[in-house]
Amino acid sequence: MKAISVPNQTQAQPTARRATALLLPALGLLLLAALLLGVALGPVALPPQVTLAILLKQIGVPLEVAFTQQQETVLWVIRLPRVLLGALVGAGMAVAGALLQGVFRNPLADPGLVGVSSGAALGAVAVIVLSVAPLGVFTLPFVAFVSGTLTTWLVYVLAQQGGRTNITTLLLVGLALNALAGATTGLFTYFATDPQLRSIVFWTMGGLGGALWPTLLGAAPFVLLALLLAPLLGHALNLFALGEAEARHLGVEVEHVKRATVLLAALATGASVAVAGPIGFIGLIVPHVMRLLAGPDHRRLLPACALGGATLLILADLLARTLAAPAEIPVGLITAFAGGPFFLALILRARQAEGRG
Image (cartoon, rainbow, N blue to C red; front, top):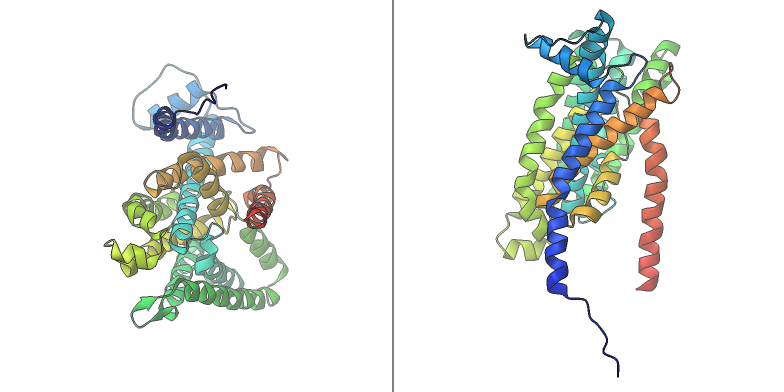
């Protein structure tokens, strides 16, 4: 009788570990390539040597490469802050999605579930309709961030009972406050003038067209804080997959992890929505793709989501400003066109898995 060969699992496991170990460097290189493409491509060409010469000039190191004043202005004033803001927002939204999917133990969880996106939208629309600007151009992002954070805080407070937070209740309260914030936003929109309506529509589509250095520097501390602290919750989120009771028995401070997770997700999402509008599906698509590549371990998954989210939004924004040049498509439409079919595929895949089970 012919022997049946069985794959050697002890050989396959080191190979899989090596592939996973190479994932983060590969994603880093992919992000670097996306950054270079995002800076170089556009109506004004910026070859790599020109970009390097302009950047070195800013720190007082001359390079013998000729470039025009127009190229310098386009790179330093317009394109570089836009590309860096895209990387920051993409990383923040992706990590927020991975955090919430981990704490909810639901692969369809999205940063919008905790109310931060709808709350930020309400604040932004109120600023536009009421025409108040005590902080100048920074009024809208500031109010959007504060209102989004306050909405998330209210969701968390209402979901608490006896000092504990029930995840199902948190989800339901988030949906209720999302609906209430959406209705209030609709009421403001109803009373808006035609120019205000145009501003509201463009803001709610999401985009990076208003990126400036002050905008980038204003959002960076909040998003970077969330990105740096999120991997510290990786081990606890891994144990959350076993269930809250099991995680508690294994020494996890469950309420502390819930509170920290929601807070970090709100910081990253609130700051991102405040400066770029509600760009959808980044927090849903990237964690799923990275989970297939990096595995379920949140200690690797969260850094991978940061790199993947930054890359995806840079490339989506590149398409948004080049597909219909000289016009510009809101980047939120690009991510929605990609995310809609992806979301449907997830639902169909889950239904097929239930059918086989």
